[in-house]
Image 1 (spheres, rainbow, N blue to C red):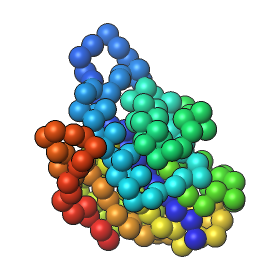
Image 2: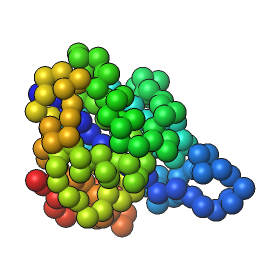
Image 3: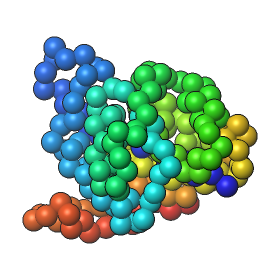
Length: 181
């Protein structure tokens, strides 16, 4: 069995129209949500063997923030230029080439590709995959090269709105129930 966690980058800033789409940073809500979602993964005891992120600023910042929360070394995050503007085939190809020793991989990137990827891998329909959402998928495969459409089961879809922040401390989120499958 393999595990795949799909993370959509957090909310980005549109404050500076002269910055390219690739270089857009996170806005304050994006930073808060990435921090909160990282803490939630930490509380759940999630451990990744590998994190791969789009090299776009908003995606790598989201991946770095989550990595810090779960104790994953930021310098071990693999930046993947091909994730920016990629289609599902490109992502599938990258995943199928993973080292067989990797059991649990997290990928951080962009919609609409990541939304479509979840639906293809799990043969399921999700209404929305909002910014900073995190999907956990168990894969019915022993080797990454076996990855195919329908080989996964969506275990849980965590969306920032499913967790209500304490008005005093971001480190004290109270939860609504995330969508479990």
